[in-house]
Length: 119
Image 1 (cartoon, rainbow, N blue to C red):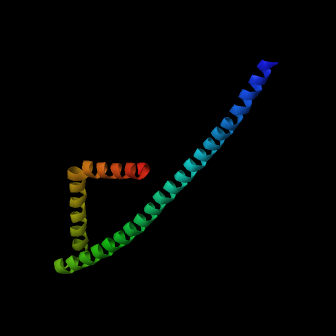
Image 2 (image 1 turned 180 degrees about the vertical axis):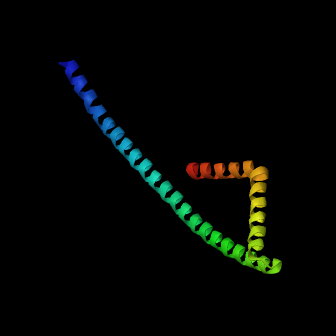
Image 3 (image 1 turned 90 degrees about the vertical axis):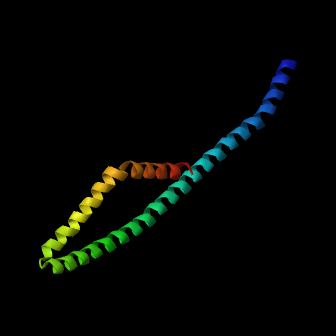
């Protein structure tokens, strides 16, 4: 009989501990879920806002490029030459970005993505 009483007393002491561990794990799960949702919402908001700025910048550069192309075409007395000059300029910029700054740009964006995930 005394062994049974000791065992039942031990079980009575362990039950609150098991409940606390269960509550703790549920709370940790909910916290992790909320952190994930918050981080996802932050990343999506940044992507959307930067996407809008990039879209507006691209439209600005496109219209500006067309204006410069027509202006140069007027200067050369042939509209096509103006567009060729602007295209050649963008080709040089693209080659310079690729050969000179490719690794720096890649590293920058890689670090930005990692920073967003581990922030």
